[in-house]
Picture 1 (tube, helix red, strand yellow):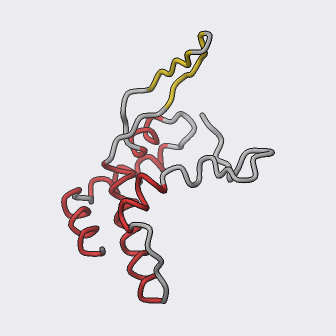
Picture 2 (tube, helix red, strand yellow):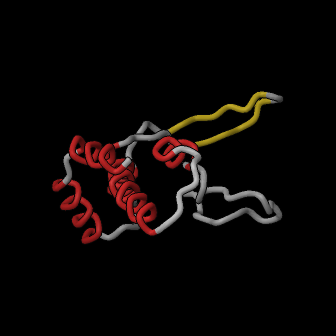
Length: 122
């Protein structure tokens, strides 16, 4: 499992894991415009809350399993697509109470309603 970090050593411009989804999620939702003021901050907070739930519980993504080099060619193998929620449920170090709580939260969600909420927040 990869370590969550803010940056890698000796890479001053690198935000290795924290900002990797900016282009895929944040910029797609709100664009590149500049937002100022309390009202904009509240609106963005509501949008990101709904988007976070939708992405973590309902949007599967690939995760790199292994990468090796054969000469100049880099070969990558990926795990089957899964949501962060599904990955958490099979993680061996999470306790059963936390997994049970995640399942309870998941049962209360409707992905269509979350998407509708995201659309209203834009």
